Image 1: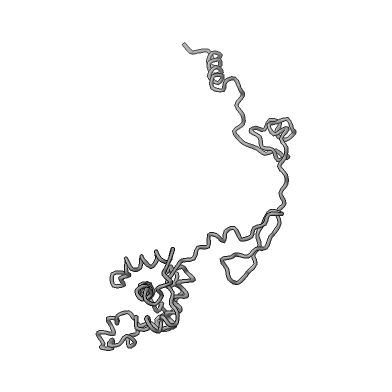
Image 2: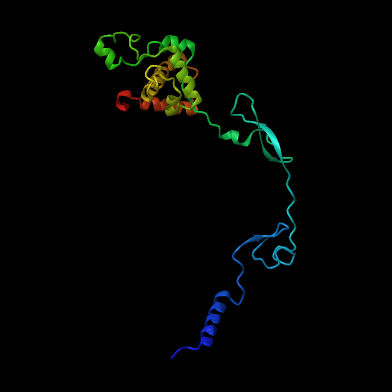
Amino acid sequence: MAVPSGKRMDALSREILVLTGGVTPPSLVPFRSLDGHAGASHDGGGDGSGAGAGKRARPKVRWIRKRFTNGARKDGMLFEHWGKVGETHDEYPFAKFNKRVQMVTYSNEEYEEHLLGVQPPPSRTAVDSGSGEGAGSDSNSWTREETDMLLNFCEEFDLRFVVIHDRWPVDEVTGKTKRSIEELKDRYYSLAKKLIEVRPRTRPTQPATGALQKHCQAIVANPFDVEYEV
């Protein structure tokens, strides 16, 4: 025997009554009225009779274009961004995230006295041809100009050797970068290791501290092995 439709509707109404507690459920879509008040339903939201009625509107904030300089740049270039009227900053707020890598550098005296003879071993081609007897006879040796350029790139690109390799000059004949990533790494870490070894004697009153000290300790504890990397 079929159940009368009226009874089914009575039962459904009772379920809804139990679930909602007799309160009409609010709209699930939030809204914001024209006067700036937020409400939970569309019942009287914009005419002062809804949930937002009686609330004081927030004070208006005026935004203007402001000029600023970034402490991370050394050229004093001026930028512009939106800022609140009356809000001032002694320093650009995001300048604190400009963290520069601490790396080993050399002076002219240190290069001439300690680094002039630091060169990679002769390449296999030079050894086979018998031209690798001297450090300067191999085309794989480094000049002072190349070394200075490497240190400048290391400082500019925070020792990111993939980027340094991308910026390195290209051979006009082969069209390829003159130095591999492994060669760039080996040159920097070889010079840094040599300086770390001699500076306790040449600079006894200027020990490395902080991040530079950790960088030096890592270089000594884990020397770069170019043969393994290749």
